[in-house]
Image (cartoon, rainbow, N blue to C red):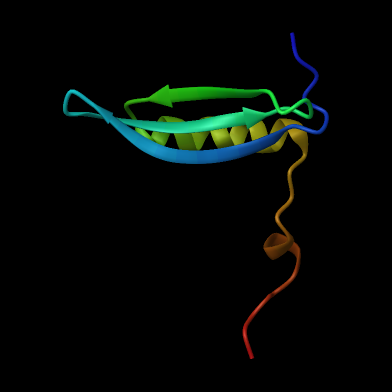
Length: 70
């Protein structure tokens, strides 16, 4: 069991193995420990990332403020 306090969710570069595309993301812990997760479905990865964002209370500044270039 891991404490998810201070954990970052990071979308990783997709990989290809024997012609099969694998979508990737990782959890990065405060001790520089990184756990990589793979799936053959991009939608599944997006669902997992959304779930982890919800669990850790992630908020993107763009969700709060309208940021634009002038």
